Length: 339
Image (cartoon, rainbow, N blue to C red; front, side):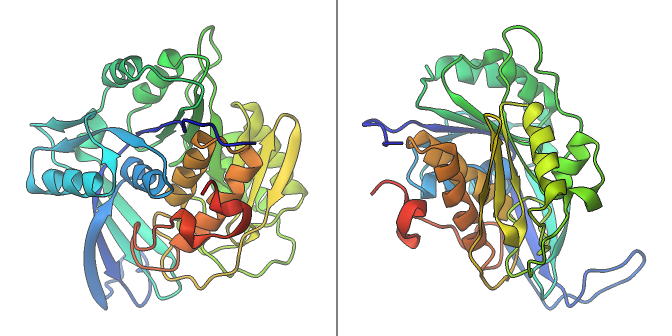
């Protein structure tokens, strides 16, 4: 597909967090105390990560979110603006702190994350609908939502979106999907990793993640943050097809095996490059941001997924959710997008 003369915008609706990252020799078992080898602080939240990733890929991007009236919220807003994300629709909540994520990372790049939602939990459907109504969205634009904000925000998106813009919903953390089957409600393209896709479709994770002998060489470009390989066997294909039926198509991320695109009754596998894993935190968010950016730039869904897979693999090569943010210049061939 040829890129439009005027590229569309990416509108991300989601969370903003401060990330506290602890480098651990092992992830602690229940009741176990582990001495961390070091710590760092950064910026995160699925909405913010996805918005920054989309902006890095060259798409005009804005974020709809809430932060606290605290130093962390002000720092997060400054960081978003420095990354080229418009923050006019980010509201400051006087009664709740900015969201916090504590991220434990082991030497293999696997992680465990605990999130305190804070102000993220106070974003309302009415705010989302008001912002979407005021943006005069066109068919070139892409709206990106995720599961770290109240469900009413996702329902409001389904009701408020006009027919033209593309809508991507990153169904993570996995849970019960909102009901968007009613008249006048939009259905999104669903993005999930293999484990989340299994949970959403009522399949067993072991069946959905049937492997084909691939070796784990990159982090999961989904959202669990593990460096586990998920294969492209019949179980994965069946799960992707079932997930696509719950929305307007689906993309299931498969870690080292890439991603599986299920749309229009067809399946398309996108392989992933081999990389050395440092930290998988935020790789799924980079995947979603890059996917949204390329769709807004006029790419077909398989083309956009190819860029997103490459971006997700790039993202796991440094510590932190935004330690390695890819830009078009970091890719060659179709994944690079428009010049």
